[in-house]
Amino acid sequence: MHEVNFIVREPLLDPKQKVVGYELAWQQTGKNAADPTPDELEALVGFVAEQLNDEETGWLLRDKILFLDAVPALLSTDALYAMPPEFTVLTLTQEHMANEDTLAAVRGLRAGGIGISLRGADLTTLDVSMVPDLSYIEVRFADKNVAAQAKIFAALKHSSVRMVGRPVTTWEDYDTCAGLGLDAFVGKLHLTPRPNSSPKGLNSAQGTILQLMDLVSKNADIKKIEEVLKRDPTLSYKLLQYINSAGFGLRREIESLRQALVMLGYTPLYRWLSLLLATASTSGYSPVLMETAIVRGRLTELLGEPHLPRGSSEHLFVAGMFSLLDRLLGVPMEEVLKTVQLPKPVSEALLSRDGEYGPYLALAEACELNSMLVGSIASSLNISPMEVNVAHLSSLAWAQNIGK
Image (cartoon, rainbow, N blue to C red; front, top):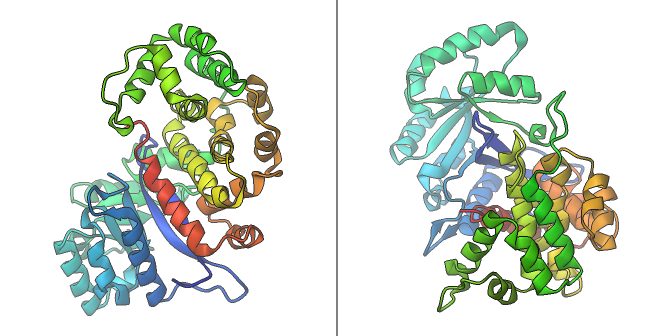
């Protein structure tokens, strides 16, 4: 792998704001940064295949589709054979597709199940004969031609091709895409609250979870924690379901809340509650935010764990998870921090990205925002591109198993 390349991602949302896939790209750093070469694109495909395929369980991203930039030279490489075809989409330009040799290679890949996305196409002049060779077409919206594009989309909707809006930088444009049934690459949009949206505040479940987290952080007596849990039958059920899941490998079923709390322990309980807090959100745009928060929490943990004292993992995870709670709950971060007692380094990270954990959180954020700061932050923390990339893909895979 090229030593200055970092993986960055952008989420692909369906009309219901659910993450259906990601575009993964190489980001080069340094003064001479340029577009990735065919060899570097092949290295990305090979690395992704190696990290996200498991011999026993298969594709670690479950039903998520990966979009990867491609050039004609990439289409005949062995690296592609290691990717699951049904979850792999290669993005080419209209100029690429105009070449007969490229088109023949595309048809071979399509026959094997790999998807092809067309970027930079002019829908008004698109060669209709090309459509059967495509699985996705990226469309760009402008106020003056939305109606015309909608008409073309209506015609293409009867074929097997999917339409993808890009770039989608406002919620108004996203709603236009959703109204037409389009998927959309949203960049940083999912981190932006909708205009005129009123604060959601805490729902009852979130209030109970925060109360429990406060008790756990203070090492309160198990009896007190049990009393709060008993007030919420749904939470009690989820805890028993969690402790009796296959991951714990218990020989007999746990039926008592107190027994479950003792078996789980304070630190794992705190992590479980923080995850539950995000999934308890009722925000209208929570599916993508929830997944982003989970990935960010895990990535912050994996980035910082090898470099910080033992016992820092849970705090790093919470810092990453909680960094999106203000958006998930619709209230300022300062207000969120009033509801639960957190260690000072976690609060510093959440408020200003400072302190012991702040830089690791900032690096996790940079990976998801395609920020040019990825390289400089990683360098300042003495974390290699390989370490960042392995942690990044591991976090994406880990997040797919939460709540499943």
